[in-house]
Length: 63
Image (cartoon, rainbow, N blue to C red):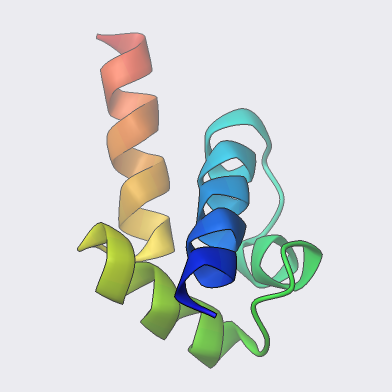
């Protein structure tokens, strides 16, 4: 299960980096459950919230 969750989080990271989909839709598209579940899983594996991850990625891309 951990491997599958990590693969889903990788997919979510890609969507957060490459699309403007709302965070709730990213989690749903990647099969990570409710928005709250998605945020929790993402934070556990990545160390930041999905919204913060997207902001950081966009800030780095524009620098």
